[in-house]
Amino acid sequence: MQTRVRKVAHILERLGLAMAGAAGGLFVAALVGTSHAALTNQAFLLAMMIGGAVGFYLGIDTPPLPFDAPGRSVDGTWIGKIDTPELLSAIGTFLAAFSAFACVGVIVLRHDPHLAWVSMIMVGWVVGVTMQIVAGTIARLRR
Image (cartoon, rainbow, N blue to C red; front, side, top):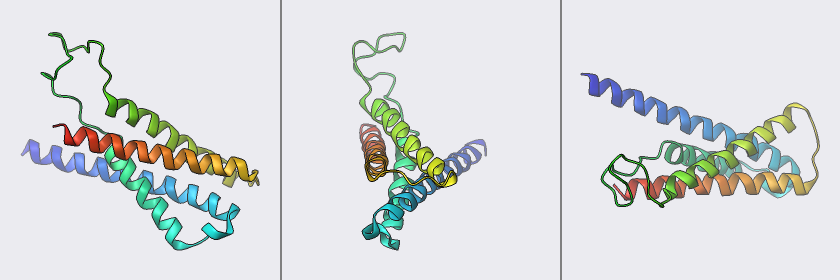
């Protein structure tokens, strides 16, 4: 019984992360769409939301390396090895979340940022979400 409750809780957590990613994608798409007329369409909005949902679903809660993986000492600490998915996930989550935060700030404060700033926000979002997806995929394939 307890394992079933834990599985349901984990699924709800993952769906919540996916919804947060989709909301971030929506904010980024809304800001970028108002700055680039060619990107003011539903396909762009949907692509950004799906990218955010997949990135946050896969990349935030990456499974750790197995305890007996090479590069670990007896006490479980790493010996000169970097957990690549963990690093990619952390940087990707920061970039995506910061981009979404910046978008919300710009939208709420009704600023009209220069095209260069909007482009940097867009690149930060795309790179961050891509890093999350890659990190989540690597972590799940190494099991």
